[in-house]
Image 1: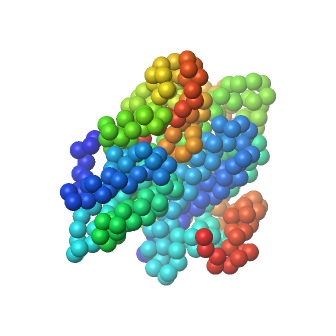
Image 2: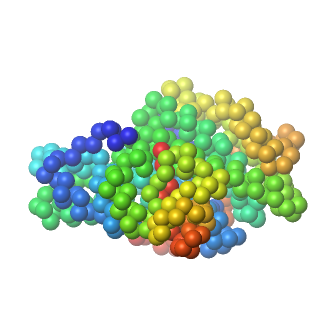
Image 3: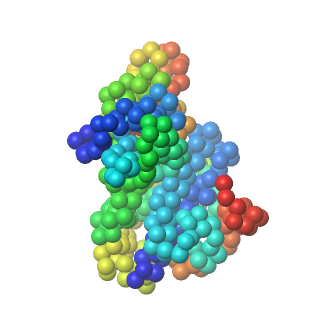
Length: 166
Length: 250
C-alpha cells in the first residue's frame, strides 16, 4: 500500500530522515511513514504528519522535533496533523522494519497472521533475539499502543511485537 | 445548524471520554498486569479519538474554547454520553461487560460514520475503526474466557451482563439534534444498527455459555444529559485539577 501518495520535497528528505520516533529512537519518522508531505509554500515548509494511533503521545514530540530539525537547517515550518488517509503498518519501509527488528521489536505480520498470533495463540512471531518461532503471547497490549508483549520459549527473551494496523 | 453538529460531535466524543476515564481508573489497579495495561491502552486510544472530535467541535463552536475546555469545563447535564459507559468498574466482569456491550456498538457505528458526508467525521471514523476493531476483539475474547471459564467467573460475567443489559437500548435512541444531522447525511442513523447489534452480542454470549438476558426494561437519558448517579463522581475526579486550580495549564 506504499502507493498512497507521499509528497516530500527532495531537499528535505535527508533532514527529515534524521528525526526519529521518540519511543523507538532507531526508527526514522520517514521509515515509519508518518510524514505524508513536506513542501515549500512561500519559503515556509508545510509538513503534514499522520498519527500511528489516535492517542499516540509521541505525535506532539515528533511535530516539535521536525520543527527543530528544519529550523537548524534554516527553514521555518508549520506542522499539520492529518487523519486521512489513516496510517497503516504497511507504510513502514523495509529499512524501518529492519531497524525495528534490530532494536528488539518484531515487525508486524500481515493482518490474518496478526489475528492468529494475538487471538489464537499461534506461534509464528520470530524472536528478535534468536529468530526462533517458538514464541508465545504474554499480553495483547504492551508498553505503547502499537505493541504487544511476547516471550521466546527457546532463549526465554521477552520482546515487543509491533501490531499490524490496517 | 452549527449547534446541531456541535452537539452531535459531543454525543459521539463523550462516550469515548467517559469510557476512557473509567478505564483509566484501572491504571495500577487492574486484576493482572496484562489486563491493567490492556485497559489503560484502550483508554489511551479512546482519549486520542476524543481529541480529534473535540478539536473539530472547538473549530465549529468558534468561540475560543479549546478541546480541553470542552472536555473539562462542562457540567454534568451537559455531557451527552450514554448511561452504559459511565457505569462503574464494580469488578472485572463489569469492566469487560461494559466494554464488550459498547465495543460492538462502537464498531458498527464507526463503520457507518466512515460514510458521513462530513469529511472530518468520516476521516476520524476511518482512523478510529482500526483501533476499535482491536478493542472489540479483546473484549469479546474476555467475555468468552470468563463466561466459559470457571463456575464463579461464569456467574460473575452473567451477573454483569444482566445488570448492564438495561443500558443497551439507549445506544439506538436518537435525539432531535441527531435526527437533523442524520437527515443531512453527516450522521449515523443508529436505529438501523440495532438488529445487527443484538445479533452479534447474542452470538458471542452463546459462545461464552452465557444466557441472553430477557429483560425488556431499558434505561435511557444520558444522551439528553440525564445521567445515573455515577457520572457526578466520575466528573469530580476528571475535573479535579480544573476545579482546584482554575485555568491551570500543563
